Image (cartoon, rainbow, N blue to C red):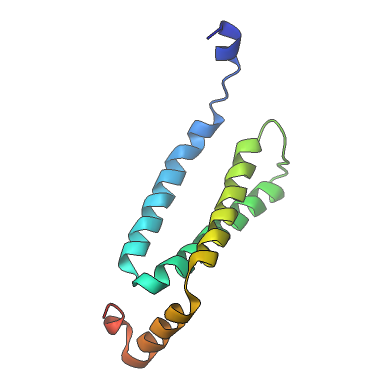
Length: 112
């Protein structure tokens, strides 16, 4: 690798790794706590909401897609994309049935 290639390395993506790892761990823990049919719809809502929140913060702070904040916009788009993918993979009928059972019998019976 030449010296010019080493100088062009952008350390900005490294700043996003820790928050993404923490968010990924929180999503996995939430999926473990929730019942099977409800994990993907809740994960979908969290991912889409987080992606839109990151995009809104970037937009309100005046950041545009360009050289300086490209990584942040890519992460926001990836979160929204993964949220839509989780929504498409979820089973709506099972999730609604589980919500009805939770409402009728209480949250404690959700795991059964």
